[in-house]
Amino acid sequence: MAPAFVPGRRGVVVGAALLVWCSSASAAAPTWSETVSAGMVSATLTTTYADAADVILRADDLELVVTHQGAGSPTRWRGAAFRPWGPDQAIVSRDGAVQLVDITGDGEAEVLVDIYTGGAHCCSVSYVAWRSENSARYRMRGIRWGNSAASLSDLNGDGALEFVGVDDRFATAFGPYAVAEFPARVWSLAADGPTVTTRHYRPYAMAAMRSSWAMFLEHRRRGDPTTGALAAYLANASNVGGVAVSGGWGRARRVMGTSGARTVRAIERRLRGWGYRTR
Image (tube, rainbow, N blue to C red; front, side, top):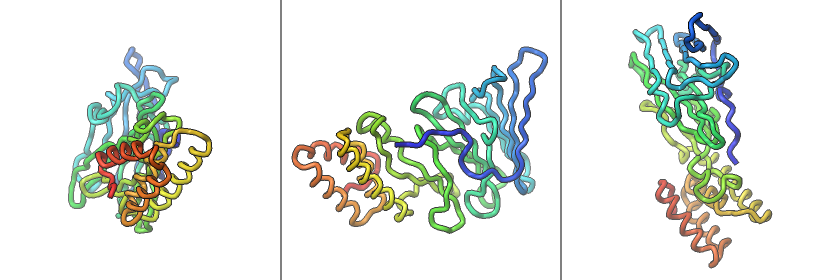
């Protein structure tokens, strides 16, 4: 199962945070602002919300301003830049919505903004702002985690952090969400933005493959639907690559037998369409 999303609780905040709450004497919506700084980088996230007692912030009013002392004028994004997936409102933690974390391991912090669009099954989104080498301007891109959040971890000890999460497309693709299982999914921050790099971390993918097979057996023992767990296992086998791919599919066909052959073929079609290796 995917972990529950807790806004603003991923990564390590570097530097000091300043929260500002202000409301004009008029009927204008109150303003919320958070500023973080580390080294030569500072970032300020500002928005409004209608009720001072609430944490529902207006996504269409979000503004992020990132300043680098050695990179010229600030870079800013407003409203529409934060709305590839969400409605007009977003749940943002009052403490830790914007974070500075050295993701690439080069000694300079990147900027992270976490929002949650609300609802029972969707959606948590992280926006990453980074500055390419020798560039004075920042770029920003959103990553839609869906039902779950991601963590930051150095999977191979090279000093750079990876976003470690799951493939949320599996949430309801193979059965009810209550029995869904998710394959591992890893993103790395490259020069052109966050990129899926799960296959570069074979030991992590192998551990995920073993775990998802154990979950398949547990679902079968309990009499639950097993298609989702089997699909997650086969996706993880694809990420491991090599003989794990053919071995995983052979194992699935043996366990499912003749009566489950149609299910295995349906999983194969879906995974191939999503770019997973099935051969």
